[in-house]
Image (spheres, rainbow over the protein chains, first blue to last red):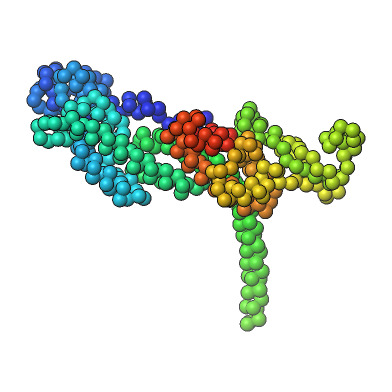
Length: 224
Length: 160
C-alpha cells in the first residue's frame, strides 16, 4: 500500500554506483560501461571510477582507494565533538550515504584508510584502523541518540530530519510513520471536536457580524 | 490500522466489548443477561461488541436512544491514572489486546473525554520510544524489558 524504505542491500547497491578516486597500479584501456565510458587507467595518475569497480580493483590489488575527505580520524573526532555539542541539530557536512560509504570502505579498503589517516607512512597503523571503525560507530550512536530524543518531541504533525543520512532515515522512517499515524488516529476524536467548535464559532461570528452591520446602517440613518 | 475490509486488526478491534445500558426493555433478548430471563428490562447493563453498539446507538425511538454507553473496564479511571503516572508500567495487553483501538472507538462514541485522549496519546508516544529502544538494542526475548514487551498492545507491536 505504501512504499517501504530501501533495504540495506539496496542502499549498498546505490552506494556502489557513486564515483570515488583511486590510484591505479595497472594500465587499463577505456571500458565501455552502461553509465558511460570509463577513462583509461594510467598509473600513477588518479582516476574517478564507480565504487564497485574501485573495490574490485582493490581486491585484486590493482589499485589503491583515496578515501573521501571526511573519512579520517581527525575529521570524525571533530564531527563527533560537534554532534555532542549540538544536541538539537545534525551536521550537514557528512555525505548523504556516509553510513554505507564508511562501512564499505572500512570493510574493503582498511589499509588505505590507515595510510591516509596516520599520515606518517602507515607505521603502527593497526590501531588507527580500529579507531576509524570505533569512531564511525560512535558517530552513529551519538546521532541515533539524538534521533531518540527527537522521538520524544514527536507529535502528530512533523519530525525534522535535516542532516540525517539516507540509511538513518530509512531506519527511522517506518517507525516514525507508524507512530505519527497512530497518534493521529488516537487524537482524531479530539481533532474533530476542535474543528466542530471552530466551525460553530465561525458561524456565530458571522451571525454576530451581520447583526452589527444592520445596527450600523440604522445608526447612519439616524445621523441623516 | 490501515482500514480495509479484511483488516484483521480492525475486525478484532470492533469485536471488543463495551458496557451498554438499555433505555428500553427488549422482549426476547433476556438471554444476554442470564439464560433463564425472557425479556431484557430497562436499565440492564450488558456488554455489546463495539460494531453492534455503535450501530444501535444510531437508532432512536421517540427521541431517546436505545442505549447509553459506559467507559469500558480497560479505560476505567484507575487505568487512566496509572497511565498518567507511568505509561511504561501498565500491561495494556492484559487490559485489551487492541487497547488503543478500543480507546479510539470509545472516544468517538463518548464526548467530553479530552483528558483521556491526551493521556492515551501521551502514553503511546512515551511507550513508542521505549519500543524503538528495544527494537534497536534487543536484549533477548527473556532479557530485561520482556515484561514491558509482553504488555504491548497490538498497535504498538506492529509499529516496528
